[in-house]
Image (cartoon, rainbow, N blue to C red; front, side, top):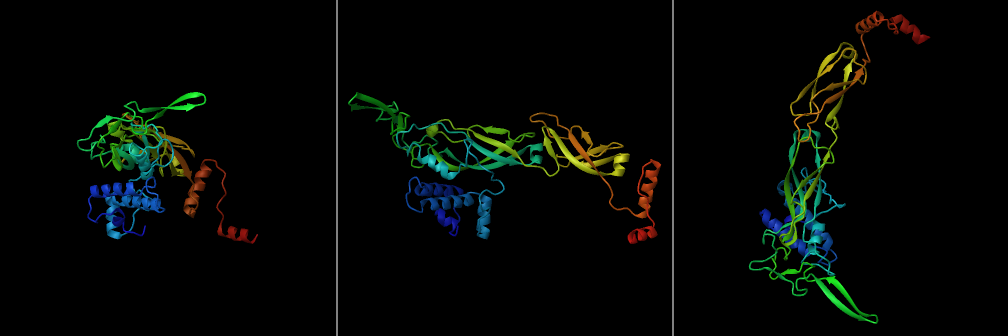
Length: 376
């Protein structure tokens, strides 16, 4: 975007969060392609949405004010995670406004209006360390939220819900058509009330009588320790708000755990791979590793005669059980490294040990033998 973000929203640089939010909703209604048929309406709406994405976030707004650049091009920043509607596909502010204009104030074709809010879905990325301890994460998402102006009722001051005069409260319109076969009766949803049987005599100007408005929601989510990849958290009432005070849907958060550079999870157990020397493998050793918990040190006891790819189990040092008090185990897979270069003294010691153990090895060549081998 080349234009100034504050100019796009039509607010001053010292505008409050509430003023920015109100300006966005007002301009979004004006520019949304469902109601504005100008050739550039869709492009201007996208520009407006991008401007709001920056100015509604305190960190991104501060960066924009300081440097004049748009942070995190492509949207989101560190706290913003992928958003997916549980019915499939992306679901952003443009879709929210499409639903809004298709609601009580903008229904068409006599379609039945759904008053209850729908469930919504989000994906939340977590690290393995966050899952090990449990974490509180802030998420940002777009939804139809209860209108603050009317308290979700859809009524302006002094307004009330009344019986629809067109369908007399039935929510349906019956029509009779004369044909050569006789009278044909059909029943359709009332286009005045959308099948609810009620209308608002004085609708709220902010939500146009719906009792809900498009908004960007910030929500703190408590992720319990031990949750597994793909498990979901249901946050009641944080999905799409219902119309005129009807029940809201739920927000369903799907946890996605990013791969760890050292640990691999298997249920409540953790797997790790370490390398030891042939001497540690032969004689045994005690090795300390960083555990999955903060500041945790784990002692791994390597037994004498440890073989390549042998697994050493350390009990109780894996992942915590979900809503439990115990932990899984840490399974350490051992790799044995062999020295690539040894000096004369080290090689002599190894040859002596090999001879003592009856192993057949290539003897050390003298300097003259090496020269002879080169010429041969």
